Length: 107
Image (cartoon, rainbow, N blue to C red; front, side, top):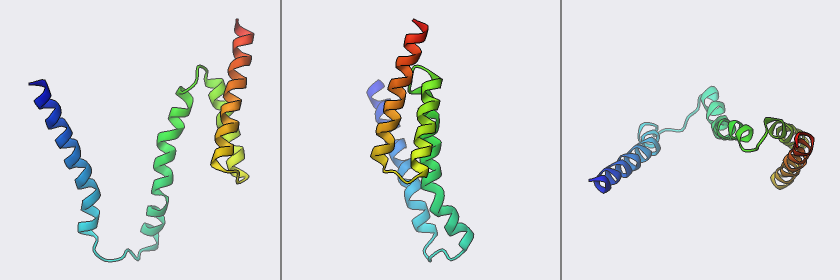
C-alpha cells in the first residue's frame, strides 16, 4: 500500500509541474507587449533565485556571524562585477576564516 501511495504522490507532483509549465503557453499565444509585464517577467528568475538562496545562506554555517560575513563579501564582489566563481570562492574562504576565529575565541 505504501508503494502505491508514493506512486500517486509522484504522479500528482508530475501533473502539477506539467500544468504550471504548460498553462502559460496555452493561455498566452500572442507576444506580450505590455512593458510592465515584460519587465516584471524579466526579473522573476533573479527574484526566485534570491528568495531561495538568501535564507539558505544564513543556515548553512555553524554561525550566523560567519554567514553574514560571507554574504557581505558576496554582495561586495558581485557589485564590482566579479565572476560567480570568484564570489563563491571568496565567500567560502570568508566562512572558513570566520568559523576558525569563532572556534578559537569560544574554545
